[in-house]
Length: 116
Image (cartoon, rainbow, N blue to C red; front, side):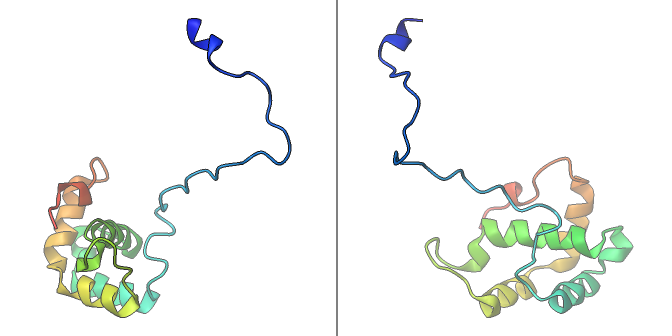
């Protein structure tokens, strides 16, 4: 316990700097929430995700993961708008994405296996 010698053990006083906690990653319910539901429904139909056993919410989660990992096809420091996100998502091979999302069955990170 020698390290305690270097650590100040007083409690923080009001006015001390408080650092914000990092935000939690998006949950399944919030994935794709910044995209219109009509777009997500259209992409779900295009992907024929129902035949793969995926709900619209599950495909939305996969789309969100891939979009975020690849920053919707834009350079790293760019902030894509809705139109850029839509263009990127429409460019994906949606049927393949639906099959891959079904194959992972939530046991591994689909986006983590992609290289953008």
